[in-house]
Image 1 (tube, chains in turn purple, cyan):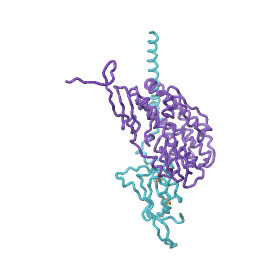
Image 2: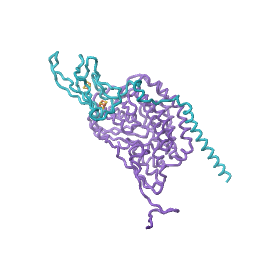
Image 3: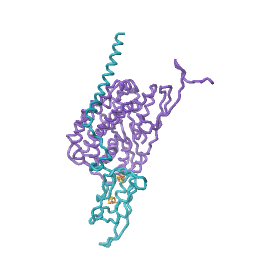
Image 4: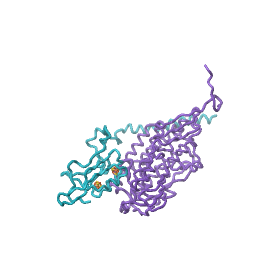
Length: 377
Length: 163
Ligand code: SF4
Ligand code: SF4
């Protein structure tokens, strides 16, 4: 029997060899079809190379053939957990280009629905995060509370996930008569449930030791890589578009931008939990003060944007989402580019995960909250 | 040394306490299992299942008791649809009463397999001929069954509906 020759870095106790394995494209903790090529040395990750493109549908190219009214529904299919905010970004960009002043009522309703979407997204993330780390109970509780929001959406918008509730100039329908009551019921219900989230997961010592001090991202790197949303704010990067460049009804509400400085997995986790309280606060301020009025501003049947370039940013549940439209004056854009938060958040993974264990990678990916269709588009 | 031992036991205490608090939450729901049920036993409750009024399940062409619809064949929905799910086939036919040639709907083809339930066709229709139906049980064994003709055989345009 010939002797096994090992090459590679020599550690104190054994000769080891670097090798690489594929994580995904079909892996439960990659949250979609993402392939990660891991270069590992035993359990230690030396390099992470994300390979994307498995769910690419060329949405940007499709937009070049669609009218501005039709583009809105395609953005539902990107980050499907923040679909309302994506819709809103396109509508705001078109309204900005055509200088349409939308009624106050529209702004307030858009903000409420956005915050509900954010809550639903964070609830799903919380449930899945627990499940990634081995706690299946949190998944059930997260989905239980999300169900109430889905019912609100289904009643008012007609769909539970891909709602397509915004149209350029306003909303597709007025809110359902039950909307206010249901939303208030939900807020009251969820205020009692959110502390349970803390008791179940945040204070759990096993959970904490798996997240605290794991996956550190410095503020410089967060800014350098363009990591936005709760993930960026957990590293101390004040990047909340709702505060920096307020849109819709955000200028008139009071809320705190959650900024933490630890930059580890637990900070990202905590930032989202605290953000849920802020969303509840925003909804509470607005739900009784929906102004009367029209739910749509008058618009032309065929929307033609004047020649020029338009950019609109909104804060989705994952971060800074941007829509960049170049118009040649036709009814479809000449070029449309989406700046999706997930893309930047994904490519910082190599930086963050180097040196940690494979099991930590699952926790890190969970706290960055990737949604693959958003990254691939 | 003494502090290290104290920390060790403190950590054990905190761990057990944290776990018990978490189990308290789950225990509460086991004890009150009936109170907060939100799931529905779907195939069993089919008879009583009530969808929300605005729920978007499929596009339907409305017909009244006399087998009349309101579609004039104007193709506005076809143009509004982002993915070509609707095909309106129309022809110019003589109106039996006035004798004038008029655009009429021949076949309303609806590709359910491509439809994204975006509601744009419903908003575009000038005569409110189509509407979103509540049926969501679309599973079939063959893809071709998802291409439907929505106007019923022998149906006519309702009187008084103008383009
Ligand atoms: S709902 Fe949308 S995708 Fe479906 S037929 Fe109507 S316009 Fe087309
Ligand atoms: S828009 Fe209405 S009337 Fe026109 S073709 Fe479509 S269904 Fe018929």
